[in-house]
Amino acid sequence: MKLFAAGVSHKTAPVNLREQLSVQRNELVDVAGALKWRGELDEIVLLSTCNRVEIYGTTQGQTTDIKSLFQLLSSEARDLEPHIYVYENVDAARHLFRVTAGLDSMVLGETEITGQIKNAYEIARAAGLTGRVLNRLFQRAFQTAKEIRTRTGIGCGTVSIKSAALDLVRRISEEELSHRSIMVIGAGKMAESCIRFLIKKGASSMLISNRSFDRAFDLAIRYGATAVCFGDCLFGMRDVDVVIAATSSPETLLNRADVENVMKARGQRPLLLIDLSVPRNIDSAVVSLDNVSLYNIDDLEALAREGAQNRERELAACHQIIEAHVTALIEKLRAESERRYLSDRSCRSSRPHHLAVESGPLLQAT
Figure 1 (cartoon, rainbow, N blue to C red):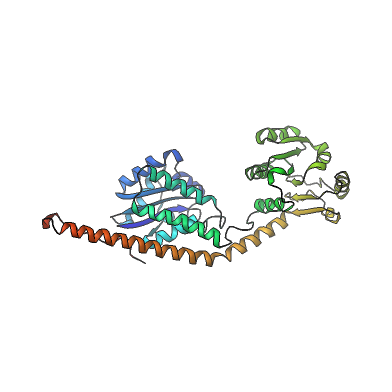
Figure 2 (cartoon, rainbow, N blue to C red):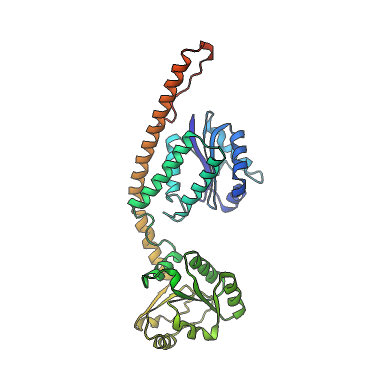
C-alpha cells in the first residue's frame, strides 16, 4: 500500500486552472467518493481552497495513474500534466505537514489553511472515506502544526500591508479592537477592502467619509458603519482613535493645520493616522505635532518586509519539528503494519495454502 499526495497549487497552476478544478464544500463527499472509486483508492481526503486542490490517499496501485483523476475535476479538456505534483509515502507526509503549518502558503505562516484542512479531513472521516493511515496522518499533521505555532515565531509579526496596519492599530492601546473607533476616508475598492478586513478582525465602531456621501452611505449600510459627510470629517475626528486615508484623490486631504485643530479639540489625546493612498492624502508635516503618529504605504511595506524576513528565519526550526513528526509517524505506521502482517500470516498458516494472501508493511522511507 502506498500513501500519496497529489495536487495543484498557486505555485504550479494559474488561478483560472485552480478555479476549474475547485470543488464546493457541499460536493466534497460525492466528488471524493467518485475519485476513490475511479482511482481504486483505499482511503481519500479531498482538499479544495482558493490556492490549492489536493488529493491525499492510499492505494494498492501505481501512483502514476493518480494524475488522471484531476481530469474528472476539470470542467473542460486541457493538459493538466505540467501543473500536477505527486508525492509518495514519506514525501507525502512531509508535504501535508508543511501545508498544514502554513509553510507552503502564499503568506508564509498563515493559519487559515490549518482550519481548511481540518474541515476537509472531518468531512472525509465522517463520510467513511478515511481509514487507519489517513487518520494517523492527519492527526499527526495537526499536532505538528500546533507544535510549530507554540515553539516557533512562524506566525508572529506582520507580512502584509493590511496586517501591518492592523498591528499599528492594536499598538495604540491595550483595549480590544472592538473598543476603538476608526474613521476611513474613501469608499473605493481599497477603502472597502480595508473596512472588510478590520471588521473581520473585530472592529465594530467605524465611520466612513467620502466626497460622494452616497457611496459612503452605501458602504456604511453594508458593513454596519456610520457614514459621515466629507465636510464634517474633521469634526468626526475629534472622537476617533484612528484615521485611515484610502482614496484615489491626488490632493492632500489632511494638512498640518487641520490636524493641529483636531488635536486641540481632542485635548491632545493620541491620534494614529494611516495613509494608504498614492499620492499621499495626509501632509507628512503632521508628524511634528505632539501625540500624532503617521504611517504611509512605504512604512507599512517596510514593516511587512521585516515581518516576512523574521518568519523566514524560523523555517529551519519548523523543518526540524516536521522531520521529527514524520519519522515518528512512519515508525508508528510501519510497526502497526508489521503487527498486522504477522498476525495475518499467523492466521493464514492454519488455512489451506491456496487461500493464503501475502501482504507487506506500509510506507518505506525515502
